Length: 281
Image (cartoon, rainbow, N blue to C red):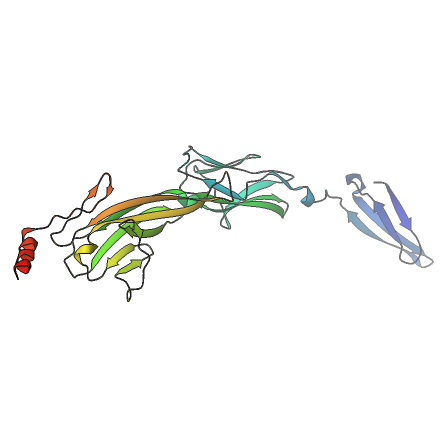
């Protein structure tokens, strides 16, 4: 220490300035007067200060970490996080301690490595450095995209009945779905004013009420997933997939050709006969 100073008078005290480990000892306070002597003992221990302010996360993950499966598919994903002045470093996912395993491995003073991964690993990750009950943290949002797929289907519908077209989609972030017909996007969803009713959610359907022959043809389901480009975090970009389906009404068939959506009428003899009878009348 820099010294031990004793102050005498009313309220006597001893001050140890800049205490060090060598100042740890049993101290005795003895009082004597005409009536005798009495004393009291006190044990002084000197501990190193808790280095709360010394915890420093020297290398932290970025605020947003995006792994885009459309750009690359590395064997593993790595989130850097190193700290000084910490007894241990732990990672949390969505507020819960991330248990290390064959999939998640933390290398001291390096970071967290995903040995295998999927879109289910997306979430908020925290790198937390601990020291004697004190801690500091950095967090990042990990987004691992999943490729968008779309698969549309439709049953044969009879004239003046309801036709239902279904589109099954996958992807992460979960994609939005739109339908188009004849190159135009179907936007009407009010059943009272339009024959088109779009159901969104886990099942995406296009319902056409009271169909006519002109409703037959090739419909396109388009699934679009919005995400963020990690190389330019302010720019949105999207991944999408499309699927064409031919709606057949009675004996009027429509085909999907390699050159794109095309409407091909194949009219049966019964329809031609009806047209001839009407012409004669």
